[in-house]
Image (cartoon, rainbow, N blue to C red):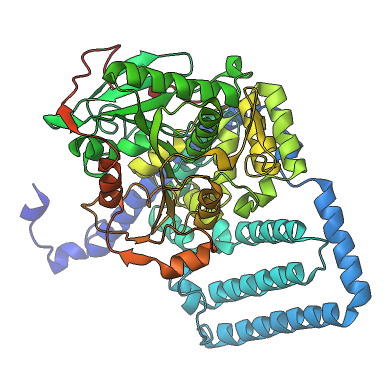
Length: 617
């Protein structure tokens, strides 16, 4: 008999032993209890197996390098001396800070007791309304979580005030202490701990602990994938395949060297501009950031504008590339340019450099100027730093203690490994790129999202040891290119040697290449024909900003670089939508007449080539 065909229970039947609603409820409870017990046993078995995998994975971790794990002892000694100096010279200020802290802490404790007695949290102005870490209503309404949140805010303010009040010897030390304090404050947020994260606790209850087991699985998988280090995955690594569902623009590999592949993209128009366009993407990540999907692909858009487009795809180096330096990358630029000129029978070309590839492009242009070589018709720089007089948010990573640690890393492995680079970048935005993803993956048990941009972000590359140290020491620390000159290939290169017509695009909220620093570098270049465009958004979204989105606008300003960056922005005009079309017009004016489209043929194989598929070990 099916359940929907069951006869109603009579009063006589209900009174019989083993029958009736109560007996049925007891049977269901016993069944539920058995199911729960089975599930618990299964989870215990999974946890035991995961624990074994975890032990094996952690054992594969290489010996730690203290130089890259934390600031050196000099910074802590400087901070201790500053505290002693502040205490001896302004004891009243220090004591006042301590008294205020303990007063706020005791008040919070008393308020929490009263709230528990009333059964509700005290009314307050929620200063964390815009902080997505505290979006769960329980942070406001539940006495326990409200107490924890308020105490965290009190502690965070006390730490930041204490750091701010130290009499540091210079601005660099102050900025480093501020950065380290912010890291500690973010790390100690109550959301980062299971016992004080209401979202994770609710999920654990809802799933009968399944979310925590899935979280452990995610943790073990990440440790296994990253050689014993805990590096949270930002995206589903199985969701994308380059050349299949991202990086799919049609093209051909037309040249290959041990350092790069050169891709020529198939034309989308019958007529193309006479002067070819060559893009040098950064070799810190893969080039397909410019070709994620057809609807936001700058590569696809450029060929649709009639550009004969070439893009370099860099080799993901291993330890055998340890002695590859900046001079080898500059030589690769020149070789790629030569190949483009040969294939198009054109003496000159337009070039683009993105991020570190833009920095190297500027070095190459300075070298060509000193050699009297005019092969470059115009240059475009995407989010490019060439003047490092202000180290910005990287100041903590560009001091001798950390750079010496990287030198030790390079000596040990021959490389600046992708894992270290990714970790460094992540801790510039720890809540978004470290703690938030870790909470979702390890405490909530969620699968990392299938997000193409985050997939690309995780597909990073190694840097050759020699090149990394030249960049860090000579360009970032010594600022030689914008200063006394950067020695390369028998020349002393200066920023003022960059004299070709140029266009630079920077991004307003870029924390990797701040726009004011990009602007200062362009101001120091020797060209008489400069265009500077400031896009809204950050390092990636400000560049990958197609016309169809109409999401981020841009500023176009004066060609006068005699004032400061702020003066330039104040006089600039704002336009909604992407800068792509504006730059496309700028390129068209410097791309010559229209000629029949150039067919790349079959070459060495289809785009995106083979180098792009190589993952960092």
